[in-house]
Length: 102
Image (tube, rainbow, N blue to C red; front, side, top):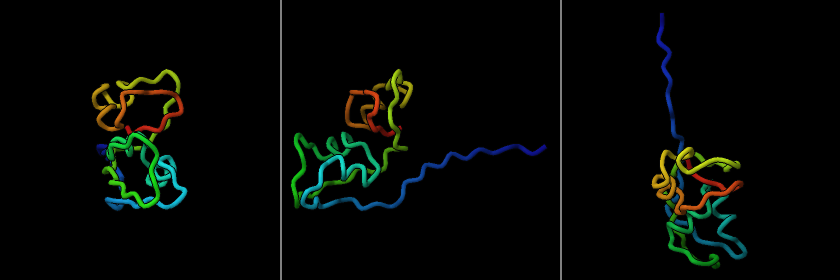
């Protein structure tokens, strides 16, 4: 009898380390383009407001699979603990419709 081997592969394609904001772009659009949660991008760059044209953003390394939160889910359910959730996503907050890294 052959043993079935399961492989868990985390696919993170090579992406640039920095990105220069173009005129008219928003933080949400940039985060979506690089498949990351907007709060993770904001936290990685210590942003407190919207981005400006010409600003250079450091892109965080791939933090996992991008996931859209559904009602009733918790930080522990999604990432194993509230601390891991906050480390990966740059926020302690969780709400339905939010994009997060698992």
